[in-house]
Length: 71
Image (cartoon, rainbow, N blue to C red):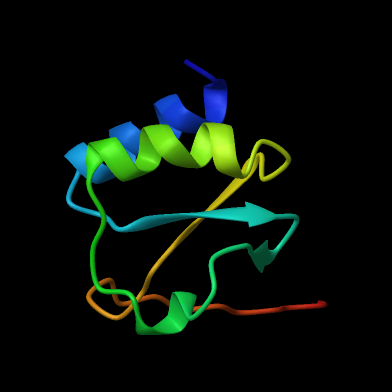
């Protein structure tokens, strides 16, 4: 199991919907239309998207706030 896979599975267990990313870019097509994933799919990502070592979280059901404060 890769470190990214372990993080994604932990996020899934916590009720989040992780997605694989290269840097900040999601590698899945139509990622913004996804609602959920499962453990089998996450394990497959480690093989299919081996270079996608970062993880994002779909925020449709996860409220977030992104504040870029310079001072």
